[in-house]
Image (cartoon, rainbow over all chains, first blue to last red):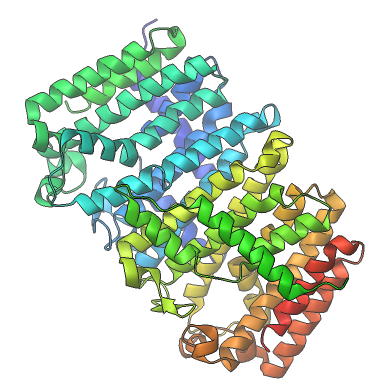
Length: 297
Length: 297
């Protein structure tokens, strides 16, 4: 039986969607608007790439995906909070996200700020409630510590600060790579590592998963930059070429389109090579690396 | 030897201050402004009431305060993030906080939003790194789950949403109590419970600590409302009577000043009564309940 990535991604994203909808439930109480705003941005049919990577890493080491499912959802909650806050007028000031009005356009800035805050805060509680905590609480604590580092001042938030500070400045390739390692790479990295850890990965397996994650995360960013140059507003669901207009640093802007494409393919190959010691359980992770490059088609 | 609360509060707030300064360190790297903005609001000489309650609860059950110190700092980080975001123009739009310009007035709105996000995110990592995790990881996980609930959509953030939605509406006393139970009470409650739990509290002790925390938390809010009516801008370090002007619901506005004072004293007595089964280790918690009422002097 051959592996169908399309089928796999559809099944997994539906699993994550159902679980997310059960974690952040609608409410008829006095804070009902908060839950509505949280669900608006959380349940918008995103690709669920980070949760799927976490579940794939859990599977790659022979773990039970139930043990990584809460963590996988927490990643999407954190990713979503970061988008909601990034879209605010005081940050990137975006009106559209995945083809729909951004959170603050629908619910106002105060509610969008608070919905982001709640998604971020609740995410850590979701990880703490992982069923594997009953058997092995230490790996859950380690995962929470790494997630906090990757999403906070040691990772994603620092990346966003550097990105805003660099607007209009020309970076070299090392500086751009450092920026992305923090801004998007750190959360990719913990997605794969955390999923593997909760699935029972050995220290050696965790090292290989880390190498995979670093390559896939950077590959994702290079392809994202390429899509921004090549895509249309319809395909992307947001204003394109906006990054270039805003003077943001991108791989095509720095390396040109052809060299950026070659870099993406090289990163994909390195990601797959990092999984050489893994068996058939890593088939989805390998296929996802290819998918990340090919989504530009 | 008699117990000196002044000496105790000074010693404990200095301990917390030192630890906070070691957790959120200055940086000369490309994200240095982020750490500067985080430290600006975090290290501003606040009362550190939540950390001190956590350490006091740890002590009350005979625990080692080192086991609750990280958690205590995390509470202050979460409290600080909530103040930074609450002060934003899209929320309460405050220019002054504890007599100094608010975070966004100094660093801009984007940085204030991100500094708040980072303080919140980092806080969970600090709890995860509690030294007691090596001996008893399960109580650390339980504490993280309760902290997430108290600070997120099940507590503080929901309270803030309800508060904003109620502006200009007149609440009855039950509605006001519910609002405060979420907005400020939930974090007080987890401060005391979490400190007790990390100190090794029995389930019965946790129940008594919860009762204490609920009374002290509400007492704090009633006194805060009273201070807002009676205080001067100088004493409070922020614009006073602002709540009344903005049509916010307060205890003096609803019950009058005298009945609000009587309620505060009743809540203090109930807090102290909840600790009847505790020995000399609970002396600081008892003294703090009295201090919360008397700080209006």
